[in-house]
Image 1 (spheres, helix red, strand yellow):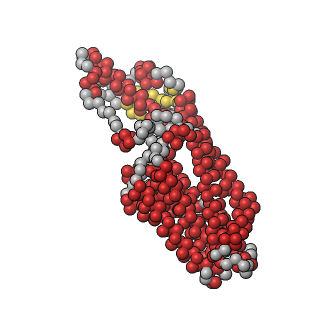
Image 2: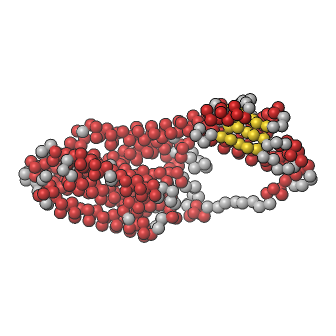
Image 3: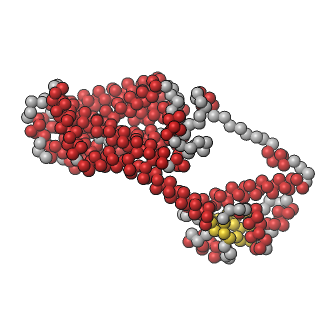
Length: 413
């Protein structure tokens, strides 16, 4: 192994990687634009739908009793000051309009509804909506909440008429306390949305970031008939392998950093999507959720770095084995699946749900470590075990790559 030769090979591969404008654009600069744009579009459509419901909601009212009384009752007790238009239709016309999306919901008062209401007898309201129309679903949820408020109001009034305290409706009061927040120095609530998204996203990027350059440094070079010329130079195979390995790793780390910056930009530019209900999501709020010391944070980062090194090795091994660029692209495209499967499997798991055995599974341990950092939970045993397992994983992969690279029938095809 010659460090000078390693440096030469490394510089060559990095120059080739950054000379490929498509690869640089798609893997380094595109995430800075694409990820914030995705979140912006999602936020835009959500806000547009909510605004459409708030400003242009239309309902039809069906009642076998006095229709005028039903309309008046709805305006005073359900609609209130909201912008909800009542469209006069027969039930059949309203049903057709609901299916076509011309109205959001249908409110049907049962027979003798108002008479039963005066007598204090339970009365039924039927709320119909179209689940294929998001505006209809949102409108139905809004009307349900309004009807629940109406129910509480009418019950309170009826009890007052009977000289009974309305407090009888709330004989049991529930207060909640999250004991996991008691260990936080500032008692700040965690942002569960960020804890759910960031680890999964980062692990997927870690596993796949080096794929474009991995395809080019071996399969691509073999297809261009320049690999044999490189093998004929003074640099031995180990130096060539390490130089290419380092190039894939550095390119991967750059792509990971840029993707993470793109994710942070997407979060900060669209705080409504990631609000925890108690505070606005800003950069300060994001970092305030990470209440761990320097040690656990470094261990979590080391777990992510060792995972990146391991998968850079897997990528170079697959590219070495492949006979062509097309074959390498096919094999390497499957690398996303284990990351996605494990990422989505743990997406809705809290830190308390993480089992000790997960520390011994490479992708699992990195996801769990990142969740711990974001949640403010310290478990040195888990973190250290995860890093050691990933280092062993790297050593095993490196051993097999070196062994593979020494075989003529594998390198020269």
